[in-house]
Length: 173
Image 1 (tube, helix red, strand yellow):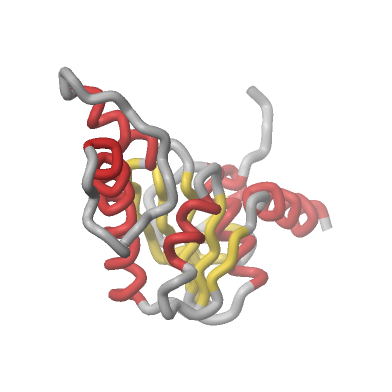
Image 2 (image 1 turned 135 degrees about the horizontal axis):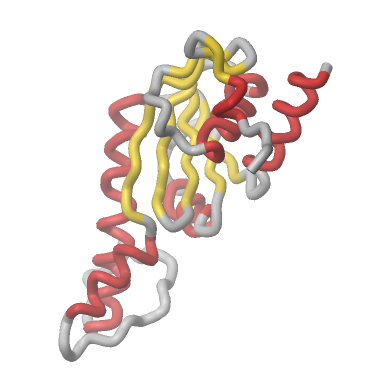
């Protein structure tokens, strides 16, 4: 198909002035969101997209430094479907106040703990100035992280659209 996506605009490992330190296999969505974050936020930022997979990209004043791809919430939850007698409960907000006391609570807590632990570990290790969350499970992740002492954490449901719009504006102008 004839279309111009962010990947086609990369020249000398740069997307409209943003350095891209990643292989050419990076998704168009990740490039668009990283570009928006690069242009609109100062300092070091983590862009977390919570869809089928959870991508965590590090964006600095130099550009897209790289990132991680983790299983999404639904993928983690579906692991439990492999158990013969287990049914999948709906995901509920994470409760750290008490130890689970039913199979449903244990599965729910196990899924959310498996999901949140690597994300929190990366945030602690990188210590970004900004955390921008987008994607279908953004509100769940934001709800779990907002109680932590992270600075400048926000949700932007339409981040990919903002990124694509900004790329089009800057490419055409």
